Length: 291
Ligand code: SAM
Image 1 (spheres, rainbow, N blue to C red):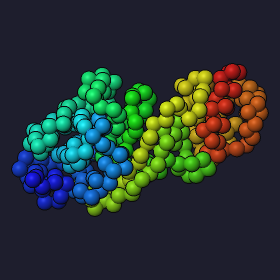
Image 2 (image 1 turned 90 degrees about the vertical axis):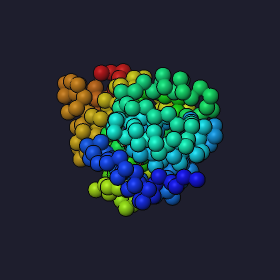
Image 3 (image 1 turned 30 degrees about the horizontal axis):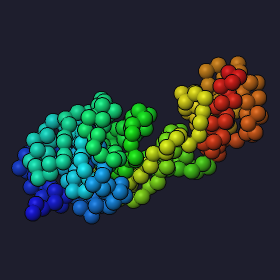
Image 4 (image 1 turned 180 degrees about the vertical axis):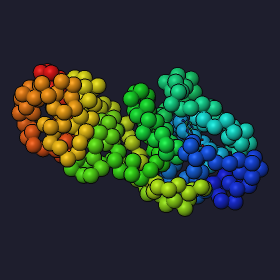
């Protein structure tokens, strides 16, 4: 029986054997606590029916724990120096395929249909590289991939923003973008001590269950996102101020914006952070009609 990869001793042995040095620029903080890894896989509800996409396997600490429970794992690793390490550490698992590629450049639709056709569901489970968390999550959501959900470790501060409710300091355009597609919940906070090297920020695990349909239906998704971003451009300003200052031609169209706000019953003096996603949807449709 193999020893788990995610113990301080085995991790050090592997790093020494291959003379591996961490690249901070690639967000390399490896997990050395098997208990945390089990809990991540539990939260993702991985079973023998599940195909799992992992982003950034590192030396395989999480990959190994997923492989023990999933039907298959497809792991994308950008750092070529880790590929021979993974070949060795994951050799006991014949349900793992490692792809040497930047996940942001991967054609995930193609990979999912090629690799997971015999799986009943597909999940993304990862300890994400922190320098690129938001672009990765937005790619997974906006590409409309056939995912059941995403369970990932990321900076606590970003998890808080993704799962935030209206009228809180963390609520903003990221909360709306994520909650439009998913039900978001922070399921764990994780101390720095379970990584080597230790990151300078606190971490959390977020669970994003993909909705069957987006939370709200809007006439034009791009315009909706533009309205949301404009509304949060300066958090302390009113919604009217932000829309007139930040929508294209907003200043000339002030009367029309006032009219749209009145039509959907939103007080122009409110701040963007107090609007629910449903209110943003009706506001965006009303503005779309007259702008
Ligand atoms: N899964 C391992 C663990 O939990 O110990 C390593 C996690 S570490 C936080 C992030 C990993 O993502 C590193 O192995 C890094 O090389 C890799 N990585 C960074 N940017 C990437 C990208 N754009 N695409 C794929 N992998 C990436």
